[in-house]
Amino acid sequence: MSFPQHRPRRLRTTPAMRRLTAEFRLDPAELILPAFVREGITEPNPLTSMPGVVQHTLDSLKKAASEAAELGIGGIMLFGIPAERDAVGSAGTDPNGILNRGIAAVREEVGDELVIMSDVCLDEFTDHGHCGVLDENGVVDNDTTLEIYGRMAVEQARAGAHVLGPSGMMDGQIAVIRHALDTAGFTDVSLFAYAAKYASAFYGPFREAVDSQLQGDRRTYQMDASNRREALLEVELDLEEGADMVMVKPAMSYLDVLADVAAMSPVPVGAYQISGEYAMIEAAAANGWIDRRRAIEESVLGIKRAGANMILTYWATELAAWLKESK
Ligand code: PBG
Image (cartoon, rainbow, N blue to C red; front, side, top):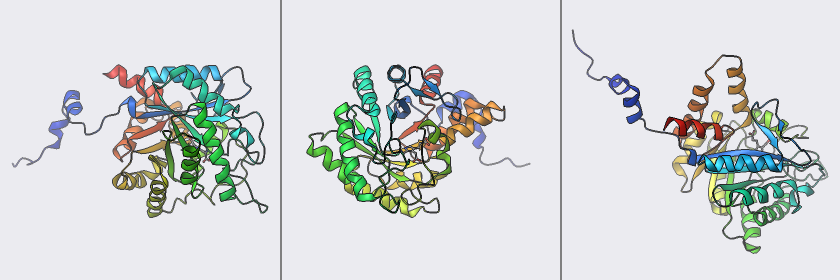
């Protein structure tokens, strides 16, 4: 009888052995909590398609931010839902718009303890739900939109955001926003570019989260799921234009893209575990079909293994609490 020459099982014999030999482990510092703040509500509004996630009031948003800071989470990414929408997304550039008020409230609450990030995009603010303004044929007009993004970015910086996350996938958006920020004196505000953002069916629950008015889809500006190489072009362009960090989004269905970007990027790489990824696990767990905690940890670890330095996840706070308790 001959024995196997190699026994990888030896390193799996006990929890202590597995912990010692783990190649990757999660840390709250790399997590970013996406959060929604809605104008005109007095109580947090739970989201049916994202159990556990709410549209915040300014007050509940502040609480969520300080809780995140206390748990050692790296950052918070803010999205605003205005009471009124129009064709050009005026509430996005309004210094008193809900997103800008949310940024200011969070900054006042947590100061520099948490990296405060905000979404630079028009879809939450337009009455047609597109990420930019429309031309006379109903097509999103790239260059007219850029000018608005520039103004939006300056107001978000003024409100106190440390990092801006341009997510609209307009060509040239990073260069225009960088220039607008620098001109207004915000040279230290960083850009976390949603560089490789795909047109995904998994954004579904987010559309409920922001009460999206969108008819149709975003396929003329977000990337096509068929493409892998093109993500590198998007990342290179954003880096050339001045991105300080780059993102791949969604995460789960694009881990190959994330690994490619992680291999070539000279700047930190983030990945966004989006609303549909959250909803799927929550739904399966609610039915008793999967172990909720293990599925959450495994899904986030997979994103880290693929190469993300930073992970946006709606479970950031809960995950950070688990990590703390297991220490
Ligand atoms: C656009 C934006 C979207 C998400 C983040 N930023 C929606 C979209 O592109 O349709 C989706 C995030 C998620 O699904 O969790 N402002």
